[in-house]
Amino acid sequence: MKYILLAIALIILPLLESFYGATLWGLNFDSPLFMAKVGYWLFYVKYTSVLVGFFLVVFALTRFQQVIKPTWCATLVWFVSLLLAALQIIVMFFGLMINIDTANKLTYYHQQRAFEDSTIYVYTSDPGAMGRAYHYFYLLCEQPLNRYQLELIVKTPWLGRTFEFEVIDNQLQITSADNVSSTYPLPDNSVCY
Image 1 (cartoon, rainbow, N blue to C red):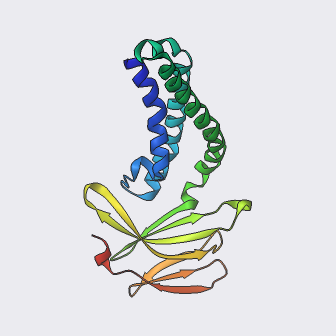
Image 2 (cartoon, rainbow, N blue to C red):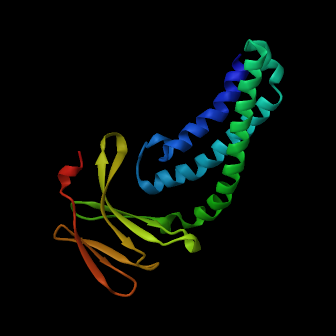
Image 3 (cartoon, rainbow, N blue to C red):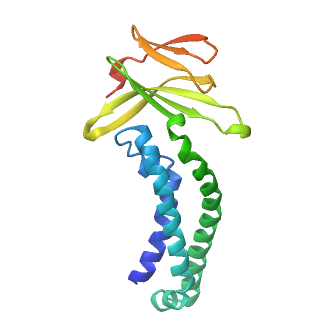
């Protein structure tokens, strides 16, 4: 019974974590860059977990049939587990190809700068030739237990690889690579609960 539960957990837990969207069910610990690094390495842990779960299930049909009665029900649970693992392995393989490229660009995708009264975090969404690139500027709110919360300030079209941003008089000033400046009001600090 423990063998079957382990095999199913190795397949289901990575699937549930992936469906949530945010790393580790939205833990938001330390900083967005730190969580991106955790997510990068967690991907390999999940992939290994699903592979191990897949091989445990492949060779466990008789164990499933011994524990789960009737036999057709055991075969159904075995087949669904096998199918879920196989689909995850295929999808995660393509994610693996993308993930390898992402590791070198984490500091490009995630920028953070502290100012007097606020910390600004910038996430760059750059799919390359697959779509348009955007920058998302957030107010980073510190939470108890070294956690954080993000409040969106503005979403801008791609500003170039090098751009500057600073906070002046409670206004976010963004200067693009072409020296075009834009100013946006910061949310009130009361949004950080």
